[in-house]
Structure formats: structure tokens, C-alpha cells
Length: 208
Image 1 (cartoon, one colour):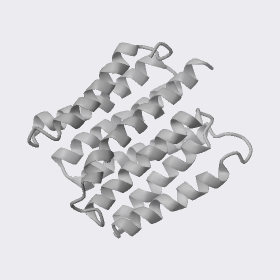
Image 2 (tube, rainbow, N blue to C red; image 1 turned 90 degrees about the horizontal axis):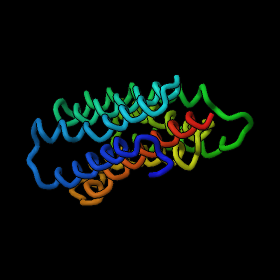
Image 3 (tube, rainbow, N blue to C red; image 1 turned 30 degrees about the vertical axis):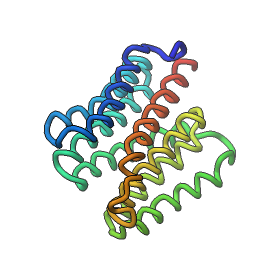
């Protein structure tokens, strides 16, 4: 972590997120576990805000804050309310990535695939208009992250991991109901994706 600013705060965010994943398989659902769930990405938001005090740094911190809020609301208020917080975060992230898009057509084909494939897959896994709407926002977030000027290996790849994590949630409700695969992969993929996005935006802003 020598190249990551404020490494102690970043490490605390990862530790909080990883420890929640372990605790969620041991502790019963409740207020403590819900708060614990929001701590990892919440600390990532604080890390981004304090590490890159630029417009993009504050913007991605707000996106991460909505992610942390969504994490808590999923536990306390259910899937629909939690998804609404994530939906707002995806729209904010899409605005950031689009405003920082690359010139030329580099990455256009994968971006189109993400833009169309994510919502269609979400709808196929759990066919409802609400899921399709959410999938459109999720796909737009991943697609614009891929064509943004931020490091693709971090921000673009992190957005893809985020999308895969959400698709696994829909699969868990649908065809993978009762499977252990979503339980094992949803949270690690999501946490890794959020961390990669945060690092990619922050380090890019700090080197400008």
C-alpha cells in the first residue's frame, strides 16, 4: 500500500469490509451487523474524500457514500429501498465517468456490451420492470466507467465486478436460489469492485 495515500484508513476500510463478510456467516441479523456492513464502503468514501479533495474525488466519495447507505438499507429496509440508494449512486457515477470519458472509440464495443448485456441479464434472472430499470442504471455505470479516462484496470474492472455482484444477487433470488455460490461471491466481488473504483479515481486525481 506504499503508493496508496492514507494507507491506514484504506486498510481499515478493507478490514471492516472483510470482517463483515466473515461475521455475516456467524452473527444473527440485526442493527449491529447492518451498521458493520456499511462501515467498509463508508470508510472508503471517507478515504476518497480526504485523499483527493478535487471535484472528482468528492464526486466518487458521494457515490461510495450512497453505496454504504444502500448496504445498510438492504439489511434494515429491504431490497427495494436499498436498491434505490444504489440506483442514485449509479446515476451519480455515470455522470462522473461520462464527464471524464476518453476521446476516440477506445473501449466502445465492450461498453456497448455492458450497457445492453447487464440490464438484459438482470431482467432474464429476475423479470420485473424494477429490476430492468435498476439494470439499466447498473449497465450505464459499468459502460461509462469502461470508457472513462480513469485507469481501466481499476475503475473499469471494478465497475464490472460490481455489476457481476449485483447480477449474482438477482440470480440468488431466481435460478440460484439455495445455492452457496452467491453467498460466497456477492460481497467479496462488491467490496473488491468498490475498492478498485475508489483507488482508481483517487490515484488518477492525485497524479494530475
